[in-house]
Length: 257
Image (cartoon, rainbow, N blue to C red; front, side, top):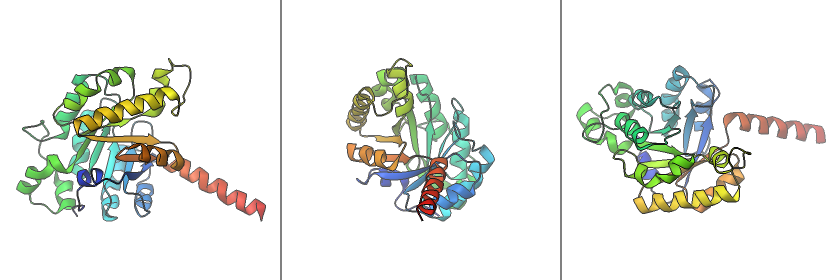
């Protein structure tokens, strides 16, 4: 089932995509959130407890709801990006892209030749897209999105060079890690003035390159702020934070009653 318009087209459509963020190790959770009004669903394998098998099982469940599936792979596990593309994900987020070589290696697993070196084996993606092999090969590089995470001083310093790497479609800002880096490890403040200045710089460079800017927000209110700032995609909170918030709201209502 090919999502129409494609995920890259949705990202460039002018309306920021609000995306669910999942880390709990059960494919039913992203499947459930895909049925809500989120524009896409992302699964976190860097800090979440979602493992490869659970994330893989969730991909067709998210697609069945007509939503793009994304995954954040563990640090340096670039080969895993190809495996998820083969399964049918629409986007991959790679953390800690701190050098041009990191960006090149990530892109090489994300794109077929002549852009990258992704190898053939897209059987899940073929089933979900409904495309014939030759047509999928022709279109695949333009149907999926590679997000290089910018979350360190090193990445900020070379963001233009990262964006110039063939096969890198955009960046994904990590405000929490950016705050740790910019504050010299003295605290975590993703809404600090230093981070806001860095995010403005990221957006300016992405716009200049004509590429895509995405970011994580810890709450819906913060997601709204970042969407208005100009990010193409904002991932909101997490399945765990939503579970806790729902539990607290239900208890508060019951206690007031």
